[in-house]
Image: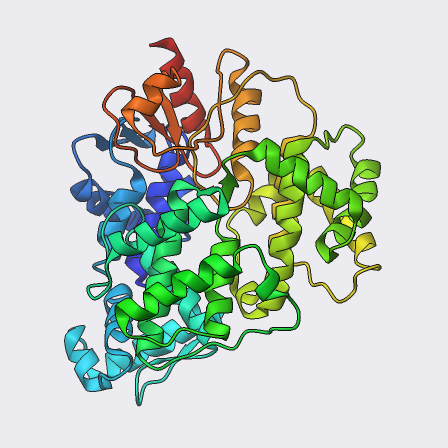
Length: 479
């Protein structure tokens, strides 16, 4: 990825993390660049900011970043710049043309010489593609590697470049796929998280384009009972609609792959209490593999965390955790490239929780040595456990879309920091609208993404609230 964009992103995220003066020395140490380079970056960023944001530079104090909490987010500013980088333009070109363009054509498209383009590819292979287990050849530029890794890479690319608005797939109808996903939600009695549904549609679009170009996936049909899985029939019908609409043959392992995408996306049940009772009964019968795994882990968790509240919500989240763990093991290619930016956070902010769940899983693995559990899963489990440890609380409300069960953890963290003055709810079972907000008597929204509401303000926060985010929530309570 372009070095200038990486530095710009790192600096603006640093300045936005707290509402205070940052010294130039702090910025130099964080970014690993000189004082002169930091000042140049500040000038470049200042030129890009909208009227709701500003940067103040003062001799002796340093740099202070100001932004209105109801205005555009930092991410909205950055994605505009990201889509202009040579990195994004090249990868988008490779995706659209399926590797048919020559090195000379691509170099000309990027306004590079042949030698510069070759150096650029070497840099991409070393810094950007290696973590995704991919590489780019110079002689015939196209992404090389496992097909599932390639699809995951393109999904991340387009999700990062169009996080809230926009649609980069000219030949695919976003609205139609969204309608079919809504049908699937009705069949399954679920509601996908706000951002999760959009991400799922992006994944399906990437899959359709790769199938159209003649690529296929290989999915293990023995490690998970796909055709008896909860989503199989709904996904099979969805695959039939997609195949008919776009003239593609989507069958067998491609259906399993789509099933894994639908299953692994984040959702909650429309009737969570009823589903929790069903899960608890199945857990008591102890017949299916995921329930046997959970029953083996529960005593270890209770021993390690005596204050753990293993109620309906906890059982639901743990059943979902093991269902997705089994799917991840059946599609190890996805597990190999699945990384969470919250791993470092969990280790730093919740070390006792992380160490505790790690020890529990290590002991549990003696009974289940064939099941792989990565650090990604340990963090997922850590958030589930942390959000179900008993704490003094009242009713909660939060509109948030993020990976795994983090919404309960974020609600818990906000309540610890803000106190009981703030009431938070965590589940929305209908489309987010002004009417829904009025019916639920909501005063303001806390969200990780922009929301289009007219009747109440929204406080935009990071996936894990920063000090600035918490201060903005406190200010909202004073108005």
